[in-house]
Length: 322
Ligand code: FO1
Image (cartoon, rainbow, N blue to C red):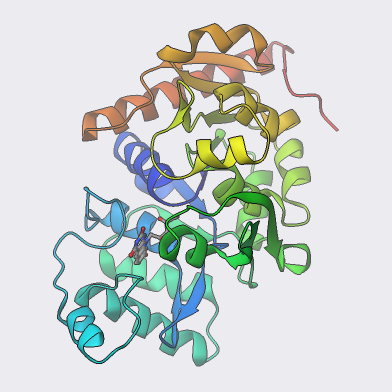
């Protein structure tokens, strides 16, 4: 079994690659819910939907979120009626938000709704919210504290970020199936997907018990850098790192994960960083443009994890067991 930790677009690409080179039912994708918000009276879980649509083959490949077979009559009419249209919701996508909102309001939890909707969309792997409790990423910027989607979409990541907060993370319970997977003897690897470490991965790590469960797990933990040659493949990762006073490098991301990593996959362009990274580094083409790129990077990640497992068997474990 493989557990992948994912945010939105970047993580979903690698999750798709993994799902195509292994039995999908052996892949558990644990997804960030810090981007979730209430909008137009709807409960919206963008990273869950991006991962689900991508794994279902329904995603819009150009922008990475929402559906490819979309129409926009609802948004056009909302605009004519003076409603909010800064967060683009397609006609088919809306059905998912309306149905999820109805089921959450009836008392069903997010992971149960997600499992059923994914099954109906033909998603093979299991897509699991990191917790069923509310966690909301907020950012302190030069415009004060902003909710995540206000910063990310409405303000197009333009505000200057000085601090992040994962409201509710401290009181959230990691999903029991997530913790059980980390303790499972059949776990072969934990893959930290190339998502933004601050807004997609750290909310997951901020939930009490998650870091300890990762460190205690028998499986190697391997991350893929979301930074290539000082730039983020997509989104505000590099800009955020600079604003937080960090070097926008693959190495800095590894430091953010500090003692969690056994392996780290960075792009060939960042070869010079190998010596400064305290994990077993694999060089690869980490930019995923085609489906083949997604599959070949996934294969490199799983091969690297297999090497780490063999080294572990020979007592060469990298990670200091706590
Ligand atoms: N991202 C945007 O930049 N603009 C949008 O209008 C937008 C709409 C949207 C609708 C549904 C959904 O599931 C995701 C959507 N996203 C949009 C992406 C969303 O902001 C995610 O939070 C990012 O992908 C970051 O993970």
